[in-house]
Structures are given as structure tokens and as C-alpha cells.
Length: 312
Image 1: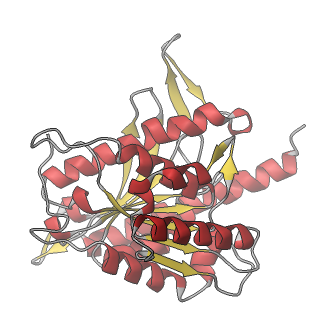
Image 2 (image 1 turned 90 degrees about the vertical axis):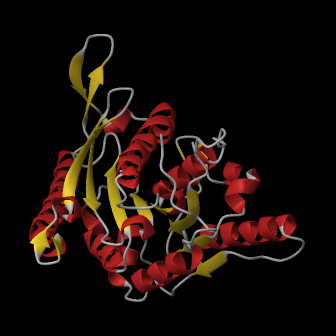
């Protein structure tokens, strides 16, 4: 039986977070859309509506960069039963540092509550209480792919460099980030046509071990993902603290094995706090600057390293 008081509390928290981020976008948009004294609509932070190939309606918030083809795009993947709202300050900080940021609300979460039923051709609503492994895998196969398709259009418009993509995954979102990165690296280029291998760095915040039968550990066997620059960040006394430290050790071992005994491209940070996820990012002052510094150092862009490429 669902506790109605708990449900109302979760709904109010979720709704207020979305409203807060929407207001932040509205307030920031006019000032951040200025270029040469004129307003450039393409550079304004804004809500973005996406529709997946399997009919899910997705809500997201986009914070464009003014660096054009030199802009590193970042996808923020929130926790299960979470939404984009709590990450507004992180989005603005990343944008101020030159990143183009997409905060996605995947199916069943935030305002991404509806989908088109292919059998009845009617609109239906997700029930998060009954969502399981199939839905979790669909987020990887469809939701995150649709987010990439949006960034692909921005890439071809010269407003970011998709070949230098970074992912920030929070709690269960870290599992999604790892599995989608593995999927992305399974699409090789065909001739001059680049299809995948765009993820160039991962930030795992308070990573969970598994969700709905999908484990983060299974991706550790993927050499392509393990070789990427990875940051693991978790409160030492938090529920994810011990498992995050074990994950860090496993990543270090895997990197040493793949790189002749040398562990490179791994940053482990375990501040002394019991905070997790969005609260860790929001309340622990050094966390956001540390994430920004890691991404700046880990994803360079030049004519020879992660060069801009037009997509077909």
C-alpha cells in the first residue's frame, strides 16, 4: 500500500525542484543569451522537449555554451526517483566554465511522465512504482540516445563538439552513465561517418552498485569505458561511501592492467560527509569546482585531440 503522505511529500519535492530549475532558466536566459550586445536565442538556457523512438516524452533543460565548436557538452543523469531540479546550480556553474549542459529527465521522472502506447496509439502515464529492469534498459537504449541526437543537432550547428562528450551520473544515474557509455563505444566509425565513441570522460557521483538487476560492475569488463578518464566522488560516511571506494579500487586495478601497470585518468574523492547525490553537490562547496576542473583537464579539444566533426 502506498503511503499517501509520503507520496504527496515526494510529489511536492519533485514539483518544487522542477519549478525552481524552470525559474532559474527563465531568469538566466536573457543575460546568458547576449552576444555582442544582441540576444542570440540559440544561446539562451531553455527547456527542451524530446521524443524517443519508442514513444516516450522527455523533458530536459539545456544550457548552451558560447564557445561554439570548442564547447564540451555534458549530460547530467539524475538518480532514480529524482529529477533535474536540484542540479540547476551545477548547470549554471558548468555553463559559466564554458560547457554546454543538458540536464535530462528520463522516463517516469520529473515532467517526463507520459508515452505513446504503440498498440492503442493513446497517451499513457508511467507508474514509477512498477518500472523495472526493462524500463531501466530502455533509458539507456532510447532516452540517452535521444539526448545525444539533440546534441548532434547542436554539434552540426557549430554550437558544441559532440566528439568531446562528458557524462555526469548521480547514484543510479551512474549505472546508466556507465552502461550508455559502453553502448556508445560499441558504435565504430564507418569510413568518414562517425557513429559513436563520443564519450570522453565520466563523473560518477555517489554511484550505486545496481538497480533493477542492472549492475555497474558488469561495465568494468569493457576496456573502452575503463580507459576513459573517470572521477568517482562520494561522501565517505554516506550510504554509497564504502561501495564507491571499492569501485575506485577496482577501476584502479583495471586501469593498471590495461596500461602496463600504470593507473592514469582516475580521480577518487571521498569528502568526510554523510551526504549523497544532489545534496553532496549542492552542500559541499569544493565538489562543483572539483568536477569542473576534472572535466577541463580530462577533455581537451584541438585539431588532433577530440576534433570537431560534422555528423550525418
